[in-house]
Amino acid sequence: MKPVVALVGRPNVGKSTLFNRLTQTRDAIVADFAGLTRDRHYGNGRLGKHEFIVIDTGGFEPDAGSGIYKEMAKQTRQAVAEADVVIFVVDAREGLSAQDHDIANELRRLGKPCVLAANKAEGMHDGTKLVDFYELGFGDVHGVSAAHGQGMRDLVELALEPLNLPDPDDESEEDEANKPI
Ligand code: GDP
Ligand code: MG
Image 1: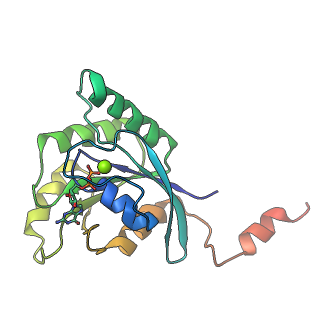
Image 2: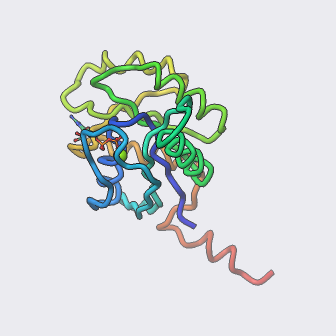
């Protein structure tokens, strides 16, 4: 089974761009228009030796009371439920927002392992804009740029590492599992 990685964050932080980068497709709709990807969206990701399934989500507004936002939040919760690990995406350029805090609390409640990615961090060499995100309580903040493909390999490795997956190059574990008792 391939591990499943869900991309979660408020609208417009670059989740769909990250999805496209990780799946090397343009399947997800990328737009300046907040909340365009309203559904869950699955793709096959591959980075180096890692193969995984990526779920793009439409954005997450835990307090959204009605209509499309409520549906998006529901879809996102389902995506988190299906995932082995969540990449929580925030916007390094806009900085920390109240909505990010709400999402952080929701993710804590859902209890999935999370990796925090501060997207749009291209050209931010000193990382000072990223320190605020430590407040979210998800440990290290990983500056990435989905649009420019920066930090992708580290991000995927960090996301998959805690899952203790067998090394795909190392067939011995599988052989071991298939051995007659
Ligand atoms: P989503 O709503 O979270 O899925 O965000 P999108 O992927 O649709 O992206 C929202 C906007 O941010 C688009 O205009 C993207 O081109 C832009 N964007 C995405 N990733 C990056 C990035 O790494 N750097 C910059 N500067 N812009 C980005
Ligand atoms: Mg999107």
